[in-house]
Length: 79
Image (tube, rainbow, N blue to C red; front, side, top):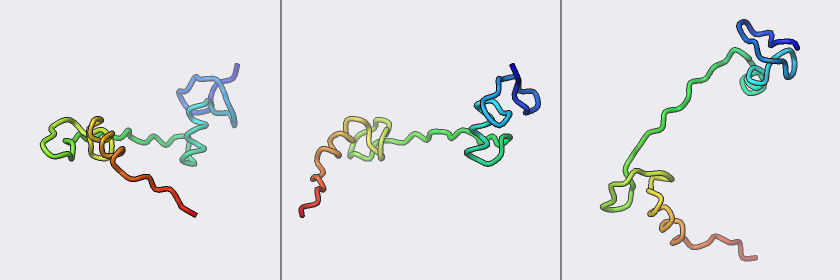
């Protein structure tokens, strides 16, 4: 079985003489050597008044996000 053509990579070839990881990098970034750093998740408190829980979605904790989402009127096009 042939190996990836990238130096020090011993994974099997998927396409274009590259392993799956390097082929995906080529498709996404145009360069199989491109390595992007992972994003660091920033923690913040819930935007709800007097709530000190960690925000999960759109600035709200899971409990208050559900309340916020359920309280919004549905936006249906009436035609």
